[in-house]
Length: 460
Ligand code: 4AD
Ligand code: MG
Image (cartoon, rainbow, N blue to C red):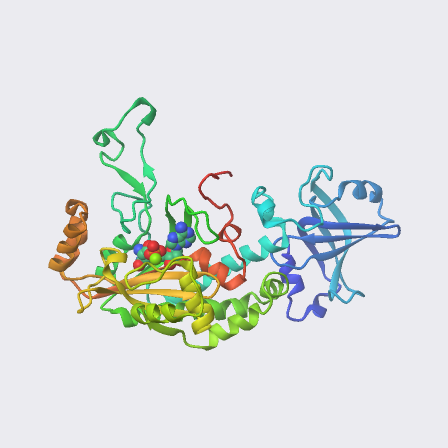
């Protein structure tokens, strides 16, 4: 039976497996032929560290193996675990038999030992998971999915699946991908002839459908891909990104804020406990001081500011912004980052934004100007969560949809939720890739998703 390299290297009492016969599989990272022995660093993706394989030159097929095992070759090794004289590892594997599955042409293999830029690695997204950085990113990504389910399941939220193809525009931002089987080239424009007999899109958010689920099941969360056809070429925008969207019935903005903060701090603690080796790697090579920053997040409450207060702070800031600030303006990432990085020096939850700059579904505050919105803003990234209490009053919501010129017929079912047993409810969406930037210290969302989709690039 095959053993994962992680099981060996992070065995709680590694000495106790010395002398055991095991079998491992993986890809050679480096090969050093030193006459009497050869050393192969083997990696199977289960952990950052490689397992050192020792091949005795007395082996009958030694010279053939030395020709075949080059960087990138896939092999399985049966051998005996032995104590390692080196100080980098406690044990290594003395090979008894080796099978080479796939050769790897050294002349053309793009992942040689030297360091490659992240830009270059994006052009070989099919091979980059074999690098240390991508391996670590993908293991942390997996851990954050686990942490997400653990957090919400622990609070009694039900995991629901909302549709990817939808006829309703949740954010009203107009940046949607159309889904159609009509041949546009032939001039088809009549959507009654289309597959769904109406215009449909890839969803920008599962929220509206999520609300319907919460208005029966009380607390739910979604975890799925969402799509935006924005041409924003930035370090924090993707055309396809993953969102976690919890929705809580019988809840207001206050419980929403508590949930969002606890969720992020839970993920942070989970990473510190479960991804130690990978975080140490990121701390050393990607963001110095990462672990200390994350410990701070895990142990300190977030700051809170209203939008109005935030504007006052920005107006007084000893700094000139590219985008001017005034009450009613949409906050740009430079503003968000000033608030989190320089003013609060920690994550901050901004609340009560002007109604004009937020989506139609957010609950109107008593002042008539602002809505019960909240954004969680973190250093280096800016917005990581957007959410709100939802407008649960039928008349207020109907008027808002009409005033904004949205098509009331598109929202008949959403309004029904306010007609039949309406309830105060609230929720938010967390951008999974932005969470990963926050946890790993990586700087571009394109480097924390296996196959990034952005405008002008849909390869793989
Ligand atoms: O603030 P947004 O647009 O909110 C919603 O979609 C709500 N319907 C969520 C809800 O209340 N259920 O997006 C939520 C989060 C943002 O805070 C950001 O982290 C992420 O999704 N996000 C993106 N991430 C990567 N690429 C993009 N283009 C993103 N747009 C938003
Ligand atoms: Mg937002």
